[in-house]
Amino acid sequence: MAAMQALIEMVIGLIALLAAVALSQFGVDLSPTKKSDGEIHRVEKKCGDAPSTHIQVKAPASC
Image (cartoon, rainbow, N blue to C red):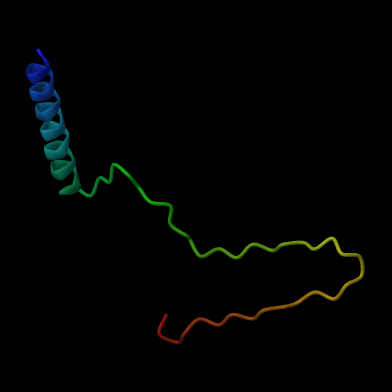
């Protein structure tokens, strides 16, 4: 009985693997990673009248 369950689980895993491979051919990603979209967020300091720091970022001319 345990051998049959192991066989069924192996077949299910194989089907899931084949489905993931087939979907990846069309650009579907089943486990998307969190990508940084490059946004800059302003963080407000609550330190009274302390001077803030400014950072200037320039994109390369090739962009």
